Length: 341
Image 1 (spheres, helix red, strand yellow):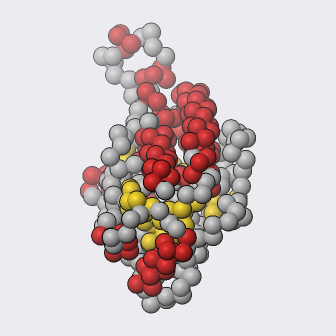
Image 2 (image 1 turned 90 degrees about the vertical axis):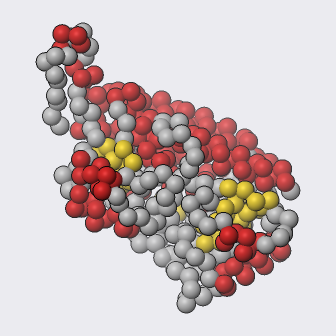
Image 3 (image 1 turned 180 degrees about the vertical axis):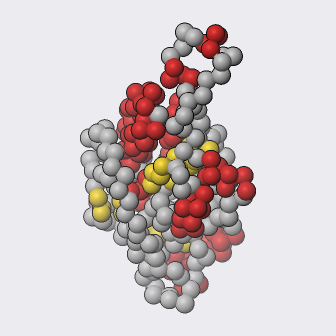
């Protein structure tokens, strides 16, 4: 990393530490929740750049020239995983081959889960399908290895409708919806930035530590808020929420679409409709990135509460506060669902 200090600014800023004048790393990130976590760590020194437009689905995307330039100019690329954005491998390799790469789902010690099978979910124990588990109450240690574990996601549907549904049997990449994972990621982000920008390494570490404390407090608050929602049964638009559910003690009964949000088969829609009747499902959540008419097709004129569950934070103000606001917004929707029962 080269540091540039204008000779015109030195007389005015001579009393400031050199670290304040250094060029901070240029950080390219994929989705708004990751942008928020990186912004927490960077603090007042700078801001990361999004290379996927807010409101767009990360499962399939075509980079604009300005977004390709963000990758090309980056010193660090921070993204969730190839499982979330399989189309991204080539652009990162071709455009950001000189940058450091941090794939967050490859950070050791985080919770990872396999994709759930079928349109309907097991409504039993939340904790039986951890691939890697850590204690949410004891995860302040920073684990800085950046080993990558790539699993391709092909969902498997219980109705075995091979002609219509994709099949996911890999790792569910929506890990940012677990605040315990986010705390680990803050440490990994601080480590990565500190290696490139050692003059500010202590600042990054301090911001990460503060962010971890705030997220731990947020998680405890959300658990208390959602304690009365343990028995609430709801349908989500696509299977993106099990990290949130298992961290905070709530349970989706099923998903209209599979984890990559591809169009559901007629058989899957029929299965969801049967589930609503059998389990007394009271709520369904659409997503702003996708066509709400699909939800209307499934539920028609039934009396279920219809809300919006958004894993990306569309409509929220980008920046360090977006991640916390996102989790609060999701908890609010589930509380509304509980109240509607």
